[in-house]
Image 1 (cartoon, rainbow, N blue to C red):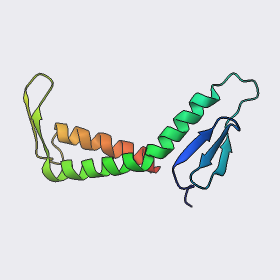
Image 2: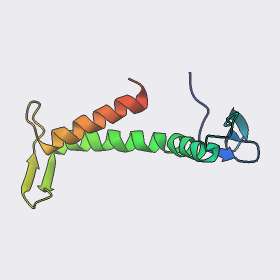
Image 3: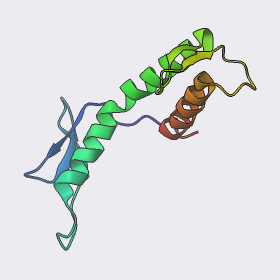
Length: 110
């Protein structure tokens, strides 16, 4: 099952999330007591939904590049960093790859 295509927007006058360009009504963002900042929550949802595909692609591309080429450069104190990406080696490249894999698992629901 696929979600409604992006981009999405928040329509404050109707308190609804809508898909563009079809203006398809996706959800109503409201609270019965007004204690929740619906506009802020809706903006956060829209920002996350609209950025999702770009973030997944960026993480996949970065992961592939680091796994293929490693990481070279200087650390925060100017010390050299080199990563060849060995499977059991704890390197900056492996730390980056682990973080990217964890984020992708969350983003992709794995």
